[in-house]
Amino acid sequence: MSFGEVLLWGLLKFAAIVLGFVMVVATLLTLLERKQSAYLQNRVGPNRAFLFGKKFPLSAFIGQILADAVKMLVKEDFDPPRANTWLHRLAPALPLFAALMVWMVIPFGPGPKPGTEGEHWFQIANLDVGILWVLAISSIGVYGATLGAWASNSAFSLLGGLRTAAQMISYEVTIGLNMVGLFMIFGSLKLNDIVWGQGELLWGWLPKWGIVVQPLGFVLFVAAAVAEIKRAPFDLPEDESVLAGGYSTEYSAMRFALFALGEFIGIVIMSALASVLFLGGWQIPWVATPLLADGSIDYGWLTVMQVGAMVIKTMFMVFLLQQIRWTFPRFRYDQLMRLGWVYMLPLSIANLAITALVMFLLR
View 1 (tube, rainbow, N blue to C red):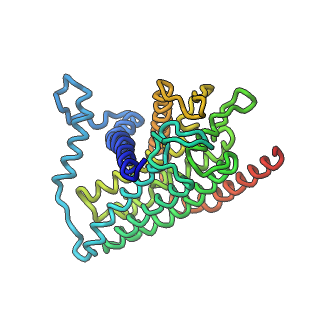
View 2: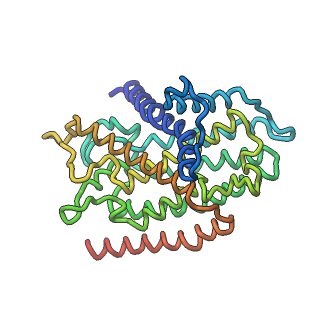
């Protein structure tokens, strides 16, 4: 294909994946999080913003989301008196930009089998270093929180920004180390290749999913992912009991909404990554992807089911991350850092060493 056709297909896939799925889920999470927490705490939750009256209960979901959006659009915005105005305004866009760019390499459906050529219809870009793209781009998000905190010229914001930087750097190490074991097992940094590798069966019956070959890695990855996206019980950068609102204290209206939307997109990102790396991605257990004589994929109804499997696994992980938020109490900041460096990091290194030893013995 020509460069123009490649660019057009890339834009269409970006619109379908990011705008058609990610943004919709992130928007729904602004309401579903409150409904889920209300269910866990045995209370009603938001139930007043009906769009078509109480005769249509489901309209409360649409009405509440619209009410939230209108509130953010019409709410008064301001710049703190002694803030760095332009940096203060720029900062909220960085986490959102990083969160959207990560989706460039996450596959939502089957791509060409490793070793063959073909179009990646369900992946925007199949980079050779796909997972390194995820780690590199997601790291930009910390600049937004830290820059916004410093530019606000507020003690609460600055402390929240410093906590954000320390926390994200600390737990990115654990996330990266627990990915390395999967790279070693499946022999590739491409997410599409890793998903194909998980389509194999161990001993003829057990799916070779990441959670099967790296169970400890999955637990550590999920725990580190919660800290990476600053969600309770690891939401110390936004600790309202200590820091008022943390790095976003001096933000309101749509600038605050950009920070919040970036956080919700982060939940979907980590859920999709966990699905791709540990839950088989678009693979359906014990169902082989049909191939044509030339080795290309025979797209059909099974492909639709595989995309649906990826979406279901992602939504399950979203539910799990939300459940963790409303189940465990908040850590102290020293406990958070000790957990990362004293316990999770050594466990990650030990898991990596054991993986290398087992692979050496089984070669």
